[in-house]
Length: 120
Length: 120
DNA sequence: TCCATCTGGTATCGAATGGAAACCAGATGG
DNA sequence: CCATCTGGTTTCCATTCGATACCAGATGGA
Image 1: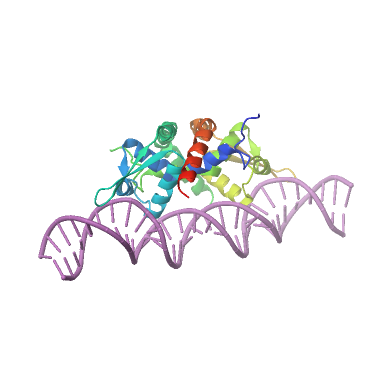
Image 2: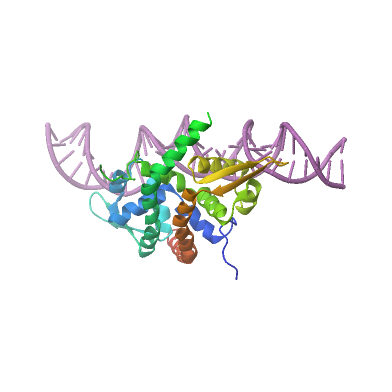
């Protein structure tokens, strides 16, 4: 048994990376981590996500066992999405990334300005 | 001054997230973290990346101040990519994600199998 | 009665992005 | 003289993305 190597295309770790290295996945996971939310609430919370991509991404997250989808037979129907323990554990792993972004946005903007000024 | 809100489309944190929430960015960053590498070495190391996407992604990483690009006038020319301190700090933040993937690949595969078995 | 509104989606379309492959210069090795 | 190495760019096609329209089914107001 050798260690999985994410640089190899068929490594299972890479499959995971393909899924979670996605803008909407990260945003939705952290949004649902705040509190369980309904479809349209998520749509309003995560500005810019289209209904199509939202439903696709939620479906993938559900399939991967990261969120649960609960349907309540109200009128109109209520669908609530919540984190599973697995999803919560991933969200905790992702949180430092958001923190890093906040701390280093200025450094990145500065680097970009420098780069753009150099090469016209 | 209020805290940046990545759920809002124009929040600068979201700009960072757009950049780093990308499969190739993560893989390249961790590859370069092992040791500085040349273009074709990276291409061989990160299986499946095309030359086009590799050069595009490296260009973005350079612009964001995450990697440096050094050209040596050998024959043929040698181009070496290395992490900046900023890139190294991001890579350290990303490392737990790779760890999480390795630890939870089985749980995810199991959830997928369950999901696929339920809904034909 | 008729129309608008709420829910959680799907269908459709053009635009942007991704990957595969070909091509490039310039020097070297056989 | 042709192949090979370097680090890319260009071209083409397929997949994906985002915006928009549309759907059912029940409710509320005029």
